[in-house]
Amino acid sequence: MADPHAAALERLIDLATQHGFSFSPAGERGSLRGERVSPRWRDVVFLGASGHANAARASTGPPVPGEPLLAESVTGTALTVMNTVLDTWPT
Image (cartoon, rainbow, N blue to C red; front, side):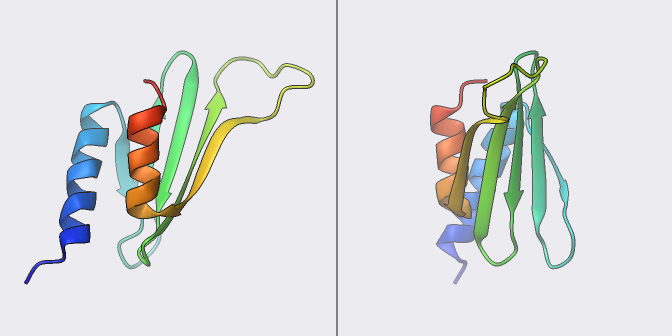
């Protein structure tokens, strides 16, 4: 029987690709790194082979004194991170 979490994650990665992300291998054992760059944001996602993941969003504009480097970040399972990025971070 196929792993339903793996199938759901694969669908989310496909959806992320349709929304401007490009994914590449990150290390060994199936980890992935995804990136999406727009005029306003640079989004980076790391999906670990163990199922843990994190993502960060930073402004692509010049740094502004007093503003944090990262606008948003999320850590959790790969499914949680991908759902958060796709549902709440505008393109």
